[in-house]
Amino acid sequence: MSTFNLKVGAAVGALVLAAILVPTFERPPVVSVQNGFRGTGMVQVVNPRLRAPIIAANQVPEAPEAADNDGDRASTIYQNVQLLGDLSNAQFLRIMQAMTEWVVPQEVRDAGNGCAYCHNVENMASDEVYTKVVSRRMLQMVRTINNHPHVGQTGVTCYTCHRGRPVPAEVWSTPMLPTHGLQAQTGQNRVSPAAGSSSMPVDPYSPYLLGDQNIRVISQTSLPRYNTTSIQQTEGTYALMMHMSSSLGANCTFCHNSRSFANWDGSPPQRATAWHGIRMVREVNTSYIVPLTPLWAAHPNGPPEAGPRVARLGPTGDALKVNCATCHRGLNRPLNGAPMLQDYPELRAISGGPARSAALVPQ
Image (cartoon, rainbow, N blue to C red):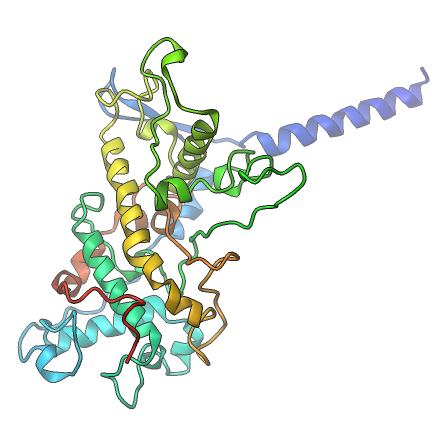
């Protein structure tokens, strides 16, 4: 073999090796952090270089000055105030202003039309603008979340998910799957963004975050013949776990003891929080998001003449639903654990009100 051929072969080999190493290895530094007591605690592996921009992107805007609770109630000043009627006028106007900044597009706010995004400004009591009906149901959803054990005392506001956008950046819908060819209709054999670009199922959300399919697939015995879980169920579970890991910026050992992933007795306490979180997301999707689908179907791109068109439905016509990433955005505690509800006590005063949904057409 000539020298030239050897050089060409070495160059090709170097390119192949670089193509394998560059996208598959993480550049240092990598830091190991122990959570829990020595001997029983688990270790988290983080890269400060990658974590710094995530933390910077999850800062909370400064809250406006607190409002007085004195004076007449909003329900006696304004008409058709169904959920926030117990607030004072100052508190009511403060939370309306905050909701506008949290949800309405920047272009609409800059044009001075923030209130018109949800209201007929000629008749603020009217429900004819569909986004007012949606907002009312979302307030009821916030009330449910802030009383859920997954959230604890930290609480959430509209900003936790929306962050100045009418539709949160991290949502999901049912994918449109191929009906023929080598790509199976189960969603396998294709790249799954939800599962770390693996070939796991492309939709790990519908069975577990909309439905209540059993997540536990690990055998409880040493003999596999007693485990009736299918390979498809196992792959679906692992795809969901990969989504949760990336959404929280955490390793498997954040919630599991690597000695036995199935054993609850030895698991870190975060596993119980995650258990509640899965059930909270199911309730949000099934009780609050999906029932509003007819309203979004009637307005698939948002209110008319209200800034850039933003899709409200997925490619198969279903509503855009929430998952772990909708709030967490790469951190195990959304917005770096900022106590959002502390700065907005008005959201503690949301009354139950009637269950508004698409069945109640705006009047």
